[in-house]
Image (cartoon, rainbow, N blue to C red; front, side, top):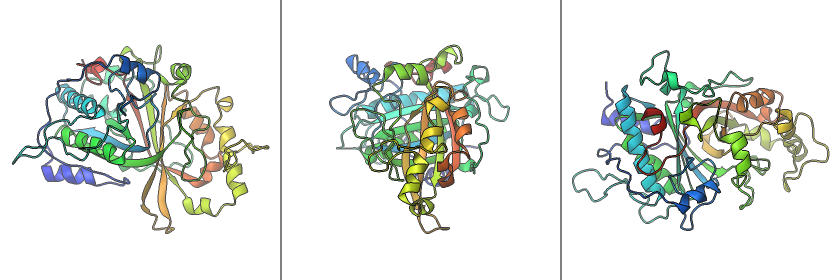
Length: 406
């Protein structure tokens, strides 16, 4: 049975996320992609640069929001597809692609002056700059097969790297904030621009898909040499040893999917692991500076490596030298989710987002090594988890996932 307007609205606003927003409006606009292929702007995406007017080109060989420098704010949504036909899925991706391309260029997705009918564009971004908005889409394992049911005839096309994560020591995963058929990662340097994009995508998805979980984030993980390293909610610089947007060689080696592990439709895409991690802030605040620094392996103020680094520090156990030389691209964001009733402290954490060529060789063995052994584990609890295959980018006139769905 299709959800009613009121049920869908409730589902969009509910959940354990830091901030959620759902709305139902007029039907989606047509999926004609009116923006011209940006030409030289595509080269800007490849080099990890945003445009001179705050526009990050949507079209290109890779989806924006992976190799591009991470803006300051995040809206992340996991969605379940309601329909069960490939035509429904294709229609949704056509609508979303067109809307994302328009919003990335600072355009409205449709009229706001609609009289007695609901506006097509929700309007929150009117008068605001594009703010380096990026929209990135991904496909979850359940899109290919859900409890043995091949809803869309895609099971035979599921990439091997899109594997379920094993249980890790210390996990306390909550199904309501885990998994999903599709994901949408929205990033921008204005929180309202980011919210507007997610709001409009939720609205345009009805009645084809509904949000499963949503989370708003701030305080990006550093991934560019052109900006100072930010600090996380534990007060340490975040991104010191990360893959930087300017390092195209590292992207080719560690991030972009390719042969032989990935099928042709995924080559040039990447695999996203999303983990919602709760921070025991009250325990961290009660830890002395020396203990904090030994846990991380760096000085808190300068970010320098400690003269003597404990073998259980996060720096040691997460280093490529301890993980067969493997690296991952981190694009995580902090979040605040009210007050923890057990402690009276802010309920905070990080939505850990990482992109890689193959989670089986990268995230999974790294996390296995960290779980329980990493001194930082004492302060962290993984409460949500998901893996998505983010396909390559598209050119004007195509839609995201067209290489798979056709």
